[in-house]
Length: 265
DNA sequence: CATTGTCCCTGGAAGC
DNA sequence: TGCTTCCAGGGACAAT
Image (cartoon, rainbow, N blue to C red; front, top):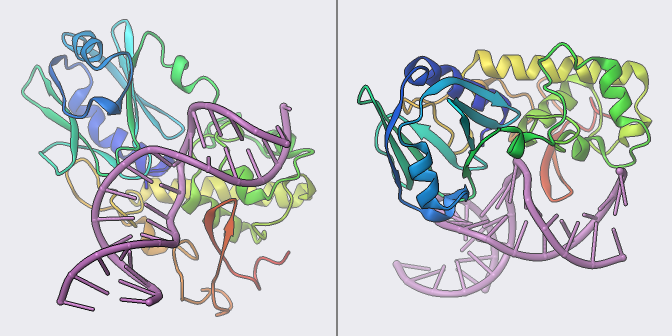
């Protein structure tokens, strides 16, 4: 399930292959995956367009083109690959013969072709790895919020790019119970959480992303981040710090893993 | 605006 | 064994 580190890894893998290249042929296999404009206009609008830069905003991958942007969201099971894959929903050929395949088993992901990427990613919160994401900025966004901190960390308008796995890892690293009210965290706890968020995301990028489900890098290889997970998706295992069994509890319908001893309510 | 619930989608797991 | 049901969860959207 691609979150910020997985999308960043895909971006870093693909950037040297696509930057400066031109789309020469686009095939839409599953029209429903094209969110804007119509599949036919998407194909026509993309062909001939040059990729100036490959970027990322939150969990969105952004192809910055000459006069437009193609935005990709992988949701749960989407991926971009350099060779044919099962469940390919769209494919792209570049002017040097490179091919890209957008595959997505569950069809939840989407593609957009827009004049300005902000039309799709405009409502996202701050980038957690940018300098403007400070402990104070996080505290300000949590102020007055009564929802469980776990639910708030998943709000992309509050903070861009954190998903279920990294939210659990960050809360564990900060020693904060997932059901604590966001607005009730002390300044010290907010600072610890801020540092933990950045640390787990940077570790994720360093280790190629977490292949707990269908996530693979563009060349088909798996990431290694999940090998280092402390609690996320470790159902039935024990806390690496105190050996207490890891608990799983649904928070707003999302499976949440934590250590009841290291993360007290 | 804040909060909560529903829906989309498919394959693997669990249950009968 | 074979069938049915449940569940995973990002995020848009609707309801309150």
